[in-house]
Image (cartoon, rainbow, N blue to C red; front, side, top):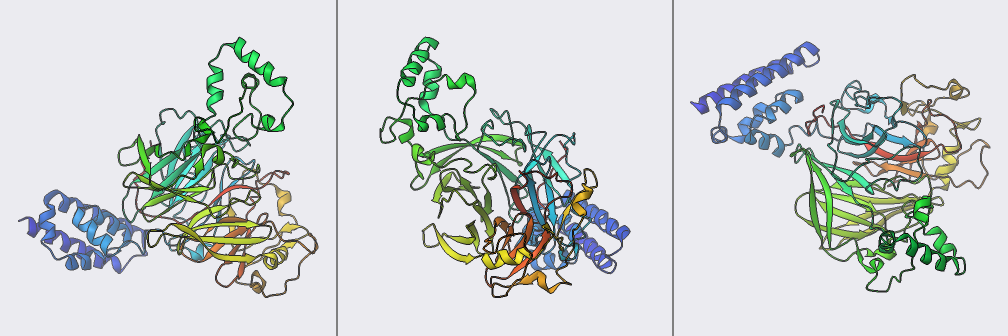
Length: 567
């Protein structure tokens, strides 16, 4: 009887799928298809056991399911495990619903209250442009005056810091769903204030998102803790005030030392007046009893991890596999932010079941989704004058930076039991910098095929004056290679080498997105061709000497996966 009902259910879906395939463009019929599939799925799921469905040949089930439009197929996938396995094994949904194209780049701007999407033309998308909410207008920001930022992106989901950093929110711009994460124990402040240069008040170094809709509909959020504070600071705070004043006077009697002056806080800034009374006793990094001589990251590392499956935070302990990055003292020599316009938290990327997090101390942590073993991979470079970017691209995990006009890109090799960075590309970008100059008119950046999505609130009319538009389809000069001779305006000197910064890597092509300062381009790593995309500066962005980009995330829409409840 169950098998007969299962067959009837499949016949019903098959019949509906054939009818739907002949009229997919009508919205009313699309709604009818979804509702009919829900009815069929409900009937089958209420009467069938896994064993009954498994009695049908998988190929026959797949042949019926692949006739459904992708919205109905997504519903049918949730009926039972065997149907889900059939859909996933044959990638029936992947071509329509899983991330496979770049919709744009989400950018956090310095001294700006919200992020914006620098969007690709709608003609390049596989879904209607109206499907994705580019402005994230559905977000529960409550108050437009409250600054908020995008912290991370992973396979179509965004992790955001909203309400001036008081809350974490995970959202999907393609499905317009969101969910607020509960407060984590001991975490009084999420995110960061876009107007603050010092981010030490945060209770963690970074918050990162891991999500793979091809494997599971659930996502996880990892909180990476700060390095431990100096041991002597805490000990001296516990001493009586008289003893602290005596030790402080002894320190003042010594010759003045700039090293002490600039070590008063974690990142080189002075502490509050209450804390400056606490004496810092010099510690020897080679002393095995010193806290600065301990290994970092530790052999056993406790991290707070949120799982959407359980809807709660848990403390997970990861055991290090292999060598540490160094001692706590040596790792602390790497400033948290060497220059003030650096990203407020370093980047991370998900790849093949693991989250790769770039940490302070010139190393990358590989955190697996399953298991408790983590690895430390030292970065190939630790330049303090270039902003590094770690991301996923066509060949796996990439690490790149642009230093003094030189682009360097490494690929992480994890074959044959070895984990090491291999230099794959090293290009001189002086020709490309001259090319980018050609898109200035009266020292103002020209528009292009990609545009910043924003509403009309806070627009500055003066930004439009003198601005010209170029189209990649109409203007042949919007695409060139490194051998072309480029003529340009005289806004910059003849020896201009550019100030390129990496916005992100294309996840499916050998392309890196570059910006300088707001002119944005796609640079093809294989043939060194560069394509001008447009001006990524919002018209609502008030002009200031501090204008610039904090963080950027290449966005790939996803129509399936995590169920985000508005809570």
